[in-house]
Image (cartoon, rainbow, N blue to C red; front, side, top):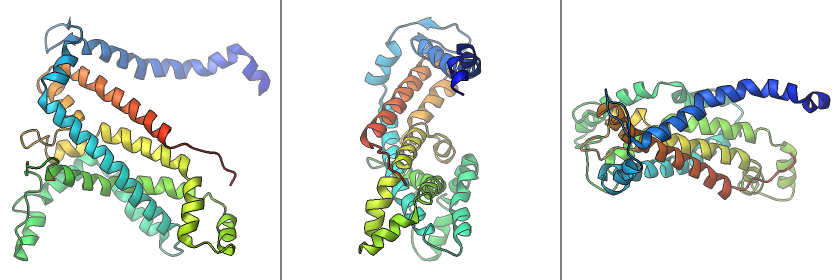
Amino acid sequence: MHKMFSDKRAVIAFLLPALILFTVVLFSPICYSIYISLCDWKALKPPTFVGLKNYIKLFTRDEIFGIAVKNTLFFMVFSVVSQLVVGLLYAGLLTNIKHGRNFFKNVIYLPCVLSSAALGLMFCFLLKPTLGINQLLALLGIEGPMWLTEYTGFIPLPMWVIAFVALWQYVGQNMMLYMAQIMGISKSLYEASYVDGATKVQSFTHITMPLIKPMLATAMSLNCIGSLKFFDLVYNMTQGGPNHVTENIATWLYYKGMGLFQYGYASAISVVLLVLCMLTTLLVNKVIRVENYEM
């Protein structure tokens, strides 16, 4: 093995396919998108270089982009905190039960494998003012709220609804990650803590949490990036409405690019989204310091 790694030709032969794939699929489109973001390009016309004009307009005159950034950051914070707490709760409970673990694990994880577009349409139907949940509330003499059409408040009600639907759909993914890490911890550590008089809560705090930090960092990074580019549920449930109050960065990018054919402006939004994803990942890795423990 050492001889193979010392052979530069062998190393290049192994790395070259991955480097070519990375360049063609990821790096080249990113570079091209950055270039297009510096151009004024609309449908049926060649791109015209305008420098930072799109970025200046984006940060100074686009009020909807400000709303989209606010909603995106809200959705990211809500998703990271709620999925961390609920996912850890599910993982802790399921690793401590003997009967029915696989059944409950599959039930909680099932929404993750369902189509987000289909779920968005389903909840859009269930939350209509005169159907679904509101119809059941009417039978009880309760007037249901306008789940997806309310537009008042700093964070409007539809954004809270979408956030809770996303929590229900994706918490199973976090639960599975945490369970995989927790079940790899040696039981002798817990037994030793119980002998020393520690409670289950103390064992979870001082043994489980430090040992699953690597998975916490991974899950939080995935949640942050997924939340920043979240699109399908928002688009299928509200399409950014009413009056753009539920726009996030991804839906505003889609509207500008595919709706108004402003490809240069949409590329500028995509570059901002890319920078946000990179900064968020770096911040998560900086905040959660992972230490190596022997298990």
